[in-house]
Image 1: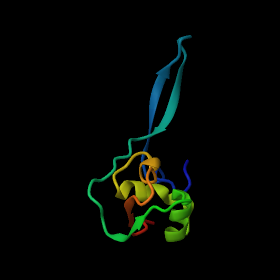
Image 2 (image 1 turned 120 degrees about the horizontal axis):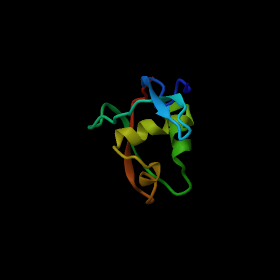
Image 3 (image 1 turned 135 degrees about the horizontal axis):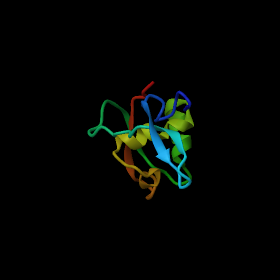
Image 4 (image 1 turned 120 degrees about the vertical axis):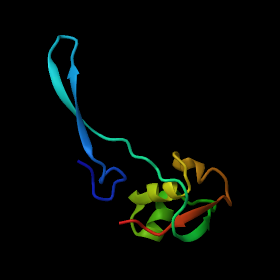
Length: 99
């Protein structure tokens, strides 16, 4: 359902029987909730956000894959990536990459 590098790839799926307005039913498949663990694990480096940088290019430089930006977000316990790049000089943890 999701690319192997996705934050949702290892989550279990579930189904829900939905009753439509016309009375017919259908099964809706969905991915269960993803919980972010608190507390940073082993870190690779503390990075200070610089002018002109983007989180995807920072992630590509450290992990070799720009789509794994969510691992940096999780390590810093933020839901919105923009929180990490809101201010020039903002420090954030770059964790060891998770396979």
